[in-house]
Length: 135
Image (cartoon, rainbow, N blue to C red; front, side):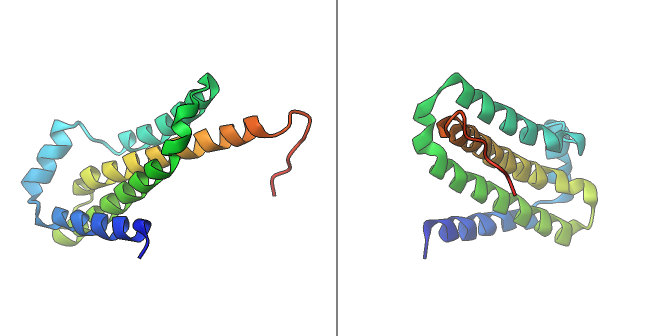
């Protein structure tokens, strides 16, 4: 079994721990961290922006961390989505989905960071006069 499958299975099982959380605990997390539906997009935007910025600055040491960061992002996405499904199954309230969905948003933001870094790195390595057509 590959490392990716193991991480996703483990994260999915940890995400099921949200099933045991009470509604009061979940509302306390929403209030304590000031979560809202609008804030779910913030990690996505920061991931894209910071990935491009780090590559434009020229930080090449991050290249060896791309694969582990992708594994972490996949684990966070799985943990959050499994947690959101468990919360909805336990409480059937949309507002209580914010804590696990925020974990998912952080995972997506990390993935978009890696993706934008890799895309800018690939564009830098291509020849300057060569135009690439996207399908």
